[in-house]
Structure formats: C-alpha cells, structure tokens
Image (cartoon, rainbow, N blue to C red; front, top):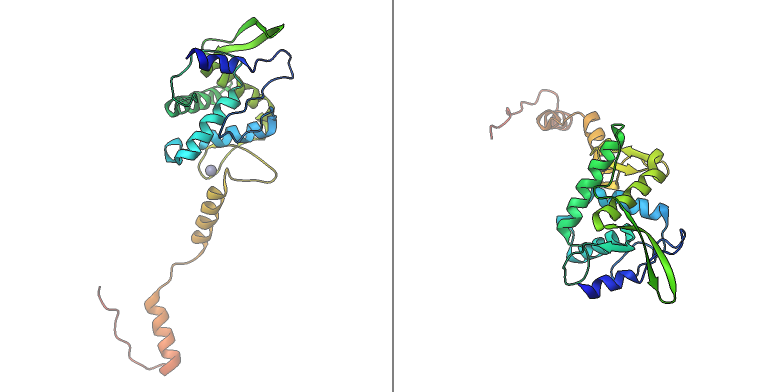
Length: 220
Ligand SMILES: [Zn+2]
C-alpha cells in the first residue's frame, strides 16, 4: 500500500499547466491532458458495458480511468495486485457520473461528496502544491465536472439508445452500432412485407398462362 502511494506522489502538479503525465501500462489516453480526447474517452466510458469487455480491454479501461482522474495526492486507495482501480469501482464511478450529469440537466448542482483538499509537500528540493487532493472518487468526479464544462454544448442524447454522447462533426447517433440499428429500423418500416404465395402465383401465371390452376397455399 505504502509503495503504491509513493508511486502516485511522483506526479504532483506544481503549477496549473502540469496537470497530468501518468504513464500506466495499458492506457490508451494521451499522457498529457488533452481536453478533447479525454472528453471523447469519457463519454464512451460512460456508455460502455464494463462486464462485456475482454480482460485486455478491462485493463486498458482501468488504466484510463486512473489517468482521467489525474490523481495528485491520492487519499484512500484500493488493494488490487496491479495497482489499478478495480472494475467494481469503475461501475460505481459510471453510476455517480451519470447521476451528476442528470443533476446538471435538471438545473441542480453536481457536487463532490467529500470535496477536494489543498496540500503542500516537499518534492525533491522543491515545495510543491497539490490542489487536487481527495478520494479517488472525488478526483474522478472532479475530472468529470471539468469535462462537462468544456463539452456541455456538444452533448446530445442518442435518439436510438438515449445515452449521452459527445457530438463529433455531423454525428447523429452515439455509435455506429446505434446508427446502423436506426437505419435498419427505418428501412424495415418503409418496406412492405413480402407475400411469397402471391409472388409465386404471379410468376407461374406469367410462365404458363393466366388460366393455370394453382394449388392453394399449403398449411404448415
Ligand atoms: Zn446510441
């Protein structure tokens, strides 16, 4: 536990612009904080079914959650072998983030549970300040709040699955899966269903003559 804590203390922010530079095995997020990419990752994470991910994808997602939260002075940790947040915690984070977003949509405040502290410590030969101290959950939700602020006017509800997504370009649905589903449903709705027996009668009459007697439809 102590060892793990020290690992995170190597990445504190002494200034506003040195926000994050975590290097964690499996992470897909860029090492340096990129608001757009982080926002895109976050809204995909919010919609993802964590239990259906492969072991490798779970590892990557757990690493990304840690990077996204940009921990500086992390208080209260977990005890997984790989040092990454456990998948159960990720599910809680998804739930809390969704609930927070719904609060904002209703016109209420999205606030942190325990709040974020403020600290200072010696780092090498300098005194560094950690403004983002808190439980991992609060750090994560604080990152969600930052992300909401930068992406609010590009958030839309997917007309297919009603999940929230970050609109990129002319995108209408949250994912290609939903777009395909919607297009298929539209296509199906406009196409009359086929009557195979009538088609057969017509084909046979064309082939043999209009007065041909055709057996009634066989009962299945
Ligand atoms: Zn969708």
